[in-house]
Amino acid sequence: AQKVTQAQTEISVVEKEDVTLDCVYETRDTTYYLFWYKQPPSGELVFLIRRNSFDEQNEISGRYSWNFQKSTSSFNFTITASQVVDSAVYFCALSYSGGGADGLTFGKGTHLIIQP
Amino acid sequence: DTGVSQDPRHKITKRGQNVTFRCDPISEHNRLYWYRQTLGQGPEFLTYFQNEAQLEKSRLLSDRFSAERPKGSFSTLEIQRTEQGDSAMYLCASSPPVGKQYFGPGTRLTVT
Image (cartoon, rainbow over all chains, first blue to last red; front, side, top):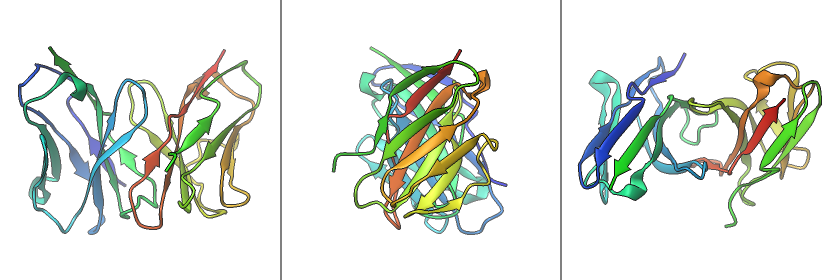
């Protein structure tokens, strides 16, 4: 069975601070995919990134970066120089297919609050 | 690309009533998914269609839940004999054959 754990329920930082959201996953599949989604107050989930289990290279996209470490089954997400607009709930998710054809398994989410 | 749309956005119903939600996926997407999200939790996968075929339905929460996608375009999710525990946000997502899932805004169900 697949499982995603986001141990941080809520994080509050002041604008311009860096913040890291943790994600630990469990799966017996050798091929799998990891995702991060953002859910702003409006409620609609926004896709941020997808990585497959064979690609452990870190990814950077603007102020966002992701650190995938198979050895610790973690896929952490860092926001550099946070902004108020980054305030949202962030979900880490797992599937065994790239398109999520089996359905995504989500963590419980981390509520990120960026204070001005 | 008009995005995934869901209707209604909010539904209030009395316990025991049947409700039906509609999802219109992005037009070129052949895959469609339903999820349920309760307060403080991540979305929970319910079912999945590839075109009109429902390829995964074992995760539907009970036999009161059913979904259809008759022509491979829009889909409906029906809950019969609603219970207070069914109160949640119901999310629809669509994707192309290989690609990320795009989510709709959700239908918030309140069972009184």
